[in-house]
Image (cartoon, helix red, strand yellow):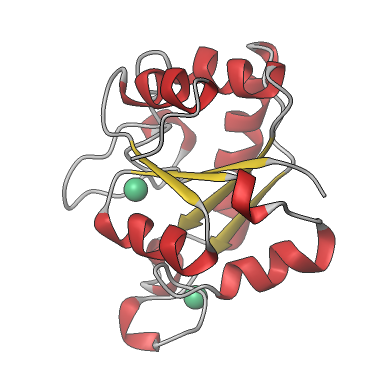
Length: 165
Ligand SMILES: [Mg+2]
Ligand SMILES: [Zn+2]
């Protein structure tokens, strides 16, 4: 089994403006300290997976190919900074689709479990919303709230000291 840190994307890694979606790479803005914090997680022996709701696809505002371009660029920048992300799992549905993978539903973790052997009790979820806390609780993961500039950096400091809450 491996220890993981699961990261939400919007609001944790990149800036989230309320009511606005990231629909292209130029609109993607890393939050202050996020790239370095991700590198620190990798350096501490945790594997990293990004778990994100991407309803713009279900709303017809973004294609899966378009999202892949954004994620490839994001992962390139993260790797340049010394971080390693195993994979990005996303829910492409709109809320009204009532799917099983939109957080706080746990369907994305079914996909994770097909490929990875996760030590849930010693792994973490970092998110900026209460729905992230809810999915963490459902999966038996430790949770950290991170939001905005410097948020992930602070969360990672506490994760590395094993401070829960
Ligand atoms: Mg978020
Ligand atoms: Zn879904």
